[in-house]
Length: 283
Ligand SMILES: Nc1ncnc2c1ncn2[C@@H]1O[C@H](COP(=O)(O)OP(=O)(O)OP(=O)(O)O)[C@@H](O)[C@H]1O
Ligand SMILES: [Mg+2]
Image (cartoon, rainbow, N blue to C red; front, side, top):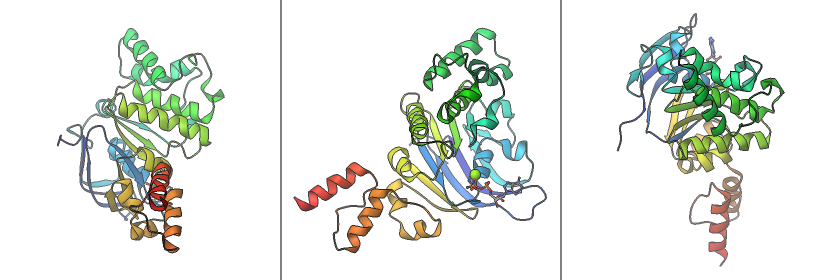
């Protein structure tokens, strides 16, 4: 097994001027190239954890942190944020808050410019990033005129110009329509499969978690409730109830069938799996 790219050890955190720890005794690690979904109810601590992984907390926001978070061998509490941003990129929930310029190309080049890279390198990286997120031809457009899914892909491209190994996305599709959601998930899937990136995504979308994630981490009131494969998590009744998780439609259909006495071979989380198991049962 390869060395993890993210190691979180005995993490505790409280915000400035607050006595309550919003994250308590969090321990987990992520292997290179894995897709980890983070889920849990509102206020559980998901955004706080995302900001801690990228070093923004506590470096830019203060507060009190115990334990340590090691990303690609770097201590996120000590390492320069500009260095960290080249290992771990972050994309936030609302793409609007991340748009600063009047042209898509400038928007995407912005991060690389801040690194002080040579002009040709900035252009090369911005072109590559726009290609990855499938926005070639949009260079001259005004970012605010794009659809929600396109804006979010611009935000992903901006982070990509730093050439990070890991991408953290905090509810990137919560404000998007179904088409925008698919666009973003397709791009993220490609980042993982084609470029070997490690993906950390905060999301409530169980169908997408089932289809894309290798593992799921559930946070409940600042504590790690469970860490497992989507199948392990969605089939765990106690976890689902405690963290108010919505399970995939096919899983809930399975539970209805179970109530009516129809037992399938396993607990399905993907539609095609459900079809296969039902066919197997009735043939
Ligand atoms: N700047 C801050 N100062 C003090 N407390 C904060 C701050 N930001 C968040 N909190 C508190 O920290 C806790 C965790 O918040 P966080 O935003 O990480 O949760 P979340 O799981 O991302 O929630 P949501 O699903 O609503 O996005 C909450 O109790 C929240 O009120
Ligand atoms: Mg949040």
